[in-house]
Length: 536
Image 1 (tube, rainbow, N blue to C red):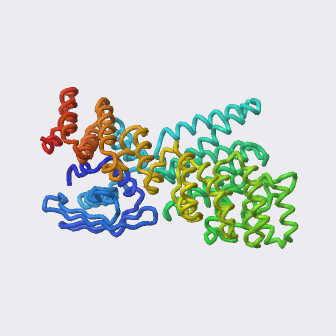
Image 2 (cartoon, rainbow, N blue to C red; image 1 turned 45 degrees about the vertical axis):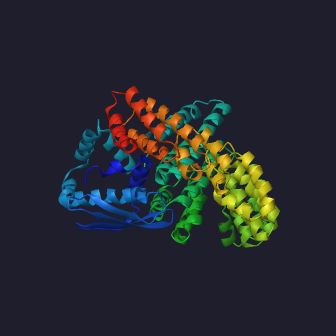
Image 3 (cartoon, rainbow, N blue to C red; image 1 turned 135 degrees about the vertical axis):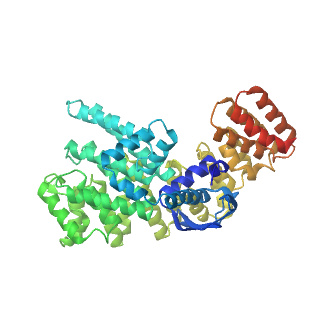
């Protein structure tokens, strides 16, 4: 099945390859006549059917997703990547045996010789391993080298704090980007490298900046686990468990313990818990003012009274982990008013970490909802929307349900004004049918990605404005020398532009202009020639 990738747009092809690599293709079966499979994505499952000709060309494809033109969606691409793999396995039955005969150095040398100079294979290899973005790795190495250099040279506290802030910002951006691009294990692996570095730093003061970064890592581990697939969760559990079991003295043990206990309560056995407690007690790394920093669960197991638990928690109040455990304890006891007080205090105390503030606000929001306090519930949603980096439509939906139709009209106008500079506010405008604001947002957005995304919403209301936007951006795209896939995408956008009312002449003139202006760009001319047949 040759050249099948050329019919897919690059984002769908990339997403499809990610789904394939991360093993989201299941129940895969193929015969000479057809391929069937299921693809899972974000808790959804899609059925795929691909019918083949005798020459292995596909003449009919179907996917149950809602992707426009779903015959070329990412799920279909994932299944075709799987088919390529299985087809190769059928033709090379001794490959696995052959690899097993080679020693590690042979494999390393051969892989290096194959990848050197082959950008496509290098990219596929990079996608196959956990580390997806080498530039992230390079940034991390630079920061950690600075941290090592300055922390061992008695540099002033301000410089060290600046480096720690840089490291903290790197981790936050790393995890946010990983969640957005579904590269959970990439961020997890790099975080582990950072944690290993901090363990070796041997700085054990709970109030030290390094400890604050460890608190942040605890929060970010939980965020990654929240968005991870089951397979990814199990890999993360195995690696964290192995680190706990193999480490006798480290900064990270306490925080990993909490993550394992909270996220994997059944797998993290009582025996492991007791062993870790003993390790923690013997090494004394988590002492605060000469007192052992016990978890709330440990205090309960030791039959501490409510007052004793409150007092010991307050003694370690600088620890976000202890406060988080104490809040859970209060919720179990239904001491909701005290839980609200602690959450409000935590928002102030944890101001160094936007992720932790977000967690506290979500907890407050859910607690106010539980108590039926609509006003304070809505107030926390407002905070989450305004403090977040993206426009969370789930929060918008929750907020909308809190108001009457008349009240919502006023509230959403405030949100329109306050969220207008967000890069993903277009979906909010489209859901609220404010196509005037959507058009303004699209016209200000660089390129045609957003214009294409909301094309169907605006083509009838604002055809002239869209036509001008497409002509302007397509000329800019054409000015950049690029690859055939990029020219193919440009041709698809011209075809999309051609569906606008009264656009035929504009399309013809644009194609003619580009052909005359760039006569030496063979790939572009071939794509335009294919397109031109439809608009003569």
